[in-house]
Image (cartoon, rainbow, N blue to C red):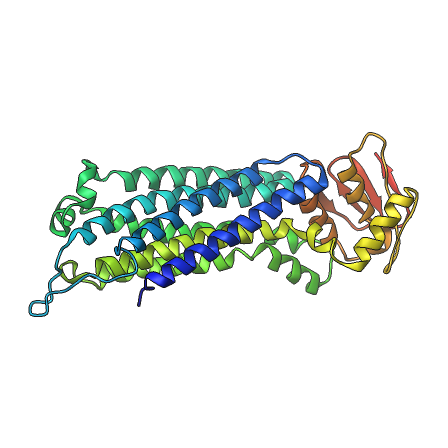
Length: 376
């Protein structure tokens, strides 16, 4: 697999750094617009973004030093690696980037699961998601320390000669491959976690597919993780250590790890950005003005909407109840879930859907055969 040159490293680093910053920034803007507090999933996404930036700095510094984005020189006669200070520098940068990647991916995956726990309720889902959270934390701690001590307690071995590294760090292949494989598997588990709940909802198949797609945006990050796995596997099983293109391989591995983190951050933030998108539509502007003029009725292009107000409720809760119009309850439960994502206050969550009513966790029950919301 060919590796990017120095210009490519600069471009990827700058573009994904800006994209992740914009996604997280907009996510926090949505929370401010909704006038709700920031929750654990928001902070974890920002934390992961910062570690992604650290990876970008490593890539930029490495490219500027001529270490990353270049290739190891080989002896034209023997084909053996000509070890220079660049190879030593590459080993140092690669070791640091591996540790940063583990922390970033752990925080990012945990952020996604915490978002799920804020949206979906039910004892079974809460229990399963809690188990997944524990597994993610255990995965992060285990591989962080396994990578840190893959050469024992003598950390200088991590950037010694290739021969020394191969002799004293014999377990590094199993650790790196195990990390890459388990990373992809963990991503798939987390991405498919809400699908059973979604496909049990009373809505048509097209809406289920659309809603599932929203939660499967993280597959783009998983694809980058799969590319990283392919690079690690090829390097371990199909490359002779003595003729290894150290700079090219580590450039590829670091770049794809960075892509996985930043694309994952963007994908994790996209489901929370609907309010900003809606604010740009003419219908949303009209509805916003009507809401300010009258708190008793809200009219939209699709028909009547019900404004369920409660003097003890927050403004964000009122906005959520507005979206639960009776005429939309017949098969259109996806809006309830997306509104829960918007609110971000942890109070309004989809509890369950029965034949005649939708239950919202904070005590509001919407019935299909009535035109008003009743507080239980």
